[in-house]
Amino acid sequence: MAGFVRFESGAKHMADNIRVGIIGGNVNGWAGRAHMPAMAAGIPGVELVAVSTTRQESADEAAAKFGARYAYDNHHDLLANPEVDVAAVAVKLPTHYELTKDIIAAGKHVYTEWPLGTTVEQAEEMTDLANAAGVRTCVGLQSRHSAQYQEIRRLIEGGSIGDVLSVSLTQFASGALARPSGRIWMRDADAHANTLSITFGHAMDGLHAMLGPARSIAAAVSTQTKEWTASDTGERFSVTSPDNVIVSGALANGAAFSVYIASVAAVGTGHSMQIHGSRGTITLDAPGSTHLGAGELRVAVDGGNELRPAVAPEDEWVTAAGLSGPPVHIGKLWAAYADAIVNDREFHPDFADAVEHHRLMDAVQRASDTGRMQEV
Image (tube, rainbow, N blue to C red; front, side):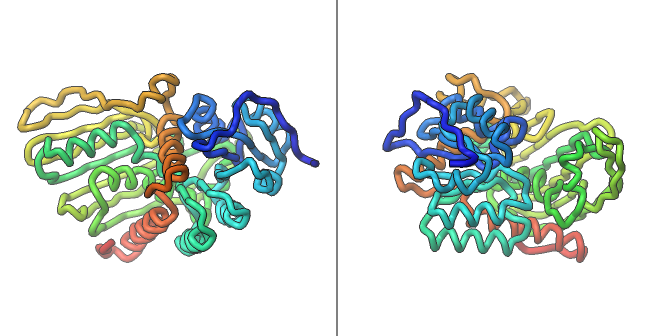
């Protein structure tokens, strides 16, 4: 078969494993930094069997590095492989829609990175198609599988900080002035791959997982850096993509919240979150986004007046594999997804969750455009 190489491997399919094919499995891309290292380390119930890119050489490289048996230069051949149970879309956002539809049409379970589509209408259509086909879905909102987020939720649900009264989250990342040429496409607001949809989207999903959904929001979404330079060529480009997102409002539980996410021109100061309750406080600080890795968790609980470091217990397989950074949360998301497929369990976040999250992103933009509070 053209565009196909098989690699010998000692891995064998087991009835309690899902066999995964990665579309966009380049070693230098997101799949090469997160998905495939986690799978190579041994995610429970997950076996990487195939990768595809647009070039046979890069597919061969990924398969050899991460232990996949099959390498393809196109996704159609990957989807035709009967040894692939689940296909993952780990490519640029504008291609999510067509690739995801192809996976569903092939009868495979599907994992698509967040954002699911460029619009809520695309997300709704993909969800309807998956439901009609009877395939299980997963969207790449991995923050909720952070051990620290899960520990925070446990503390809150256990009453350790009393009633949650207010939440503040800020995150400022460096790099607003320049991008490699391969990422300049994100400059266009119509591409929907920006600080609002991606960075704020991940941060807000984490808050939702810990504290429940928002009830009402006010917002200011803006583009403060109106020109990017391609870091490898020096060429300059005009920018319409938003880089500052400020949202405030009330959560469904009545707590006040504010979130400020921005890409800044000089030095980013990272992630800082504070959750204040009637009997305690929880803080989480990190040099970058916490959907990519762990931070410093501190708590003052049960009426205590001093913040102390807190350790969030990690899954045994993660510790045994020595994983850190992006592969951790991604790997745990895959483990939960595999368990749901094999054992027919309820699973989140699925495409239906992604639709609701797309609607929240639209509500934020609408609140900013109209200057009016939005009920969500």
